[in-house]
Every structure is written in C-alpha cells, then in structure tokens.
Image 1 (cartoon, rainbow, N blue to C red):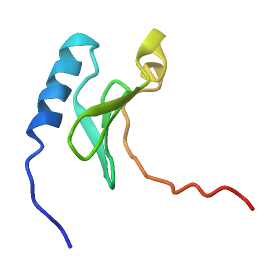
Image 2 (image 1 turned 180 degrees about the horizontal axis):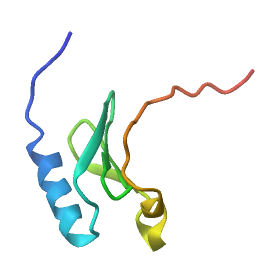
Image 3 (image 1 turned 180 degrees about the vertical axis):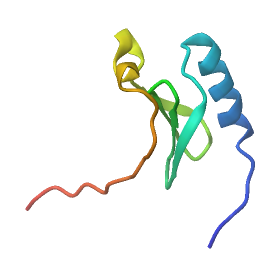
Image 4 (image 1 turned 90 degrees about the horizontal axis):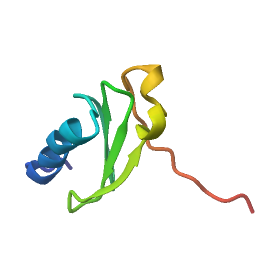
Length: 82
C-alpha cells in the first residue's frame, strides 16, 4: 500500500544542506523505513520516519564529491551469517 505525505521537513533540510555544505540538488531517492536522498554533488542524506536527518554520507574532505552525481540508491537488508 502506498501512502501520500509531504516531505516538508526533509525538503527544508535538503535546501539547508545545499546552502551550508554545497550538497547539490536531489538526483536519486530510496524509500523504505528510512528515506535516502542522493545529490548532484555525490552526497547521500538519510532521514528517519520523522524526517530527521540521521546521516550525511560523503562531503567531508571531498569524499564522494569527486565521483559525480548519485544516480541510483538501493537498500540492502543485512543479515549476520549463522
């Protein structure tokens, strides 16, 4: 089942990140229990269900930015081998 809801808080934080750390424009989106947004500058911002920014992947010291825009995102479930 799909639910429609506005991402006002996440959107505001994306605009803020674009200004503060030159994150770039959104280019890719992955939706699950978390919301991940990839940007044109190679950064991935991860939000929880309350649209609170939890992680900013890349950006520090140019990590990720040298590879260009994020074009695809995917969640992979991790299970520990027994």
